[in-house]
Picture 1: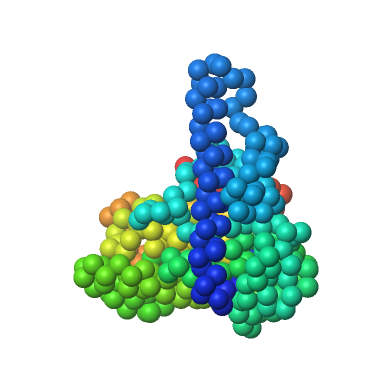
Picture 2 (picture 1 turned 120 degrees about the horizontal axis):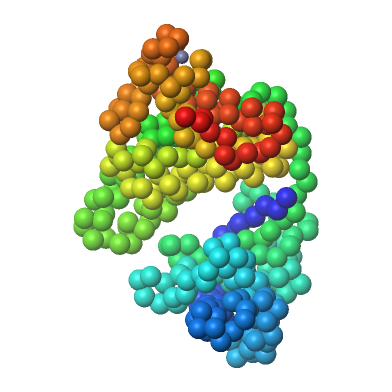
Length: 363
Ligand SMILES: [Zn+2]
């Protein structure tokens, strides 16, 4: 599998050059977007038979612009290739990349492996050396392509893609995970992964900064929240992967978002990061990872399988933390019960031999 190694660039003066490169990248990207929209319009009008220009078409159309734009021809090809990937993933033209103004896209300059040299902590691109902080994570000998990327605070990083061997799992348990609001995740064995209190503190600070109209400070706090969430989720997912051979995660029902004052984007970001980190770590450790449809997992009893009258249902039941099944009399913690149902669905889906995403309770 492929992992990304990311390092901060040391030289503050590099910023100016990289911003200029990022502008050039945006020109190539926007050319692809405009072309795509034009082709789609003509396709709808019946003037063209094909809806998409192929990646190869884009290579040909952008060929020879390297000198004028001041970036490597390999980078231009990379932009076209990644554009095609994004287009295929969303099944439509991606958005334009703005180089200026409030909505400007954060800088991004992709490169291919043959177009750069690496020596120790220095990467050479288009004849210019960029030094970066190695920190605790040494760069492996063989890397594939990569990119220079900018964060919201205007700091630049260099990312390298590295092919790593997949290693073996050590634990052999199976676990179901219910993602939630109060605790970040609840496991079928009753363990809870609590959201760090730090979030709340940062959130208060963020609100104050936003009210005061201090954009730079708000941005800094946003970055801080992001980093601390990433760190916390890294540790939580690593522990899960270490101890288990099968991990099933419920997708999050939108109704969970209804009763919260936290921004939806914050929650969404946390959940999707949790899943994507878990997914790649599982893949790396050869642990089975399953996405499970969460429908009815809160309502069904994990002991008898019945959806009894007493189980939490609908919006009004979001506050119910614990309940007793009126069919079999089992006492349930709401989230642990959901996690157990998620696990049961995963195990039965696995027995059926399909990594089914449609495994739900029928009614
Ligand atoms: Zn029951």
